[in-house]
View (cartoon, rainbow, N blue to C red):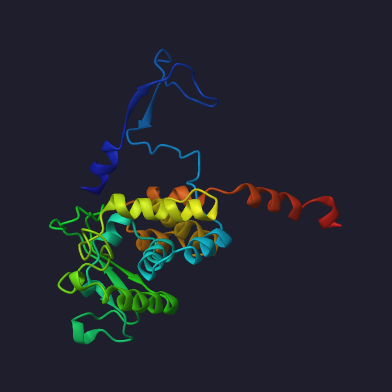
Length: 253
């Protein structure tokens, strides 16, 4: 079966001009070659990201523990905004050992679970469950968020991690539009553009530039295909300059 599948991935195509070294065969009158049926589009522009100082600024500019934890989950865990807004408290496993919760994963982590019944319309795009480890600092921010959240009486019976803290809809799960506005306002206070998905792009780019293997990054991001992760492999301008300067005559001598 494997060879049959492989055979279907290419098909005969007429060539308008013969490449160097092409052998047309005995007939010579038809220029035909096998061409790939599936072609992945080449990604020309790397996604917009934040620098490390900018990440620190947006975290410092957050006015609530909830907003700070939301940004942390996006920029350090690489979650999509829909995945973050769909988190329930039962998805947060913060102890060194979670076997009492029926989970064999060791260390602090969260679970991204695809659910179709989220009342705020949040969706896990990939539609697959995955686990994302949490750093110690993220765990502390979650605890700060819970302390703040417990002061909202309307949120007592809500299992969603991220809820509205004030207003008519206090205690109800945050919506995408609300979260987007919060992130954008934080960026405006910092003097630069910030969007929820930029945080995910930033996490992935930092992992790749930090030497994390692409297949590990793919798993962390929940990408079904390595082609989706390849966008973060593009060299930045500073990478190109550093490469040239590393072999410049002044350095080589």
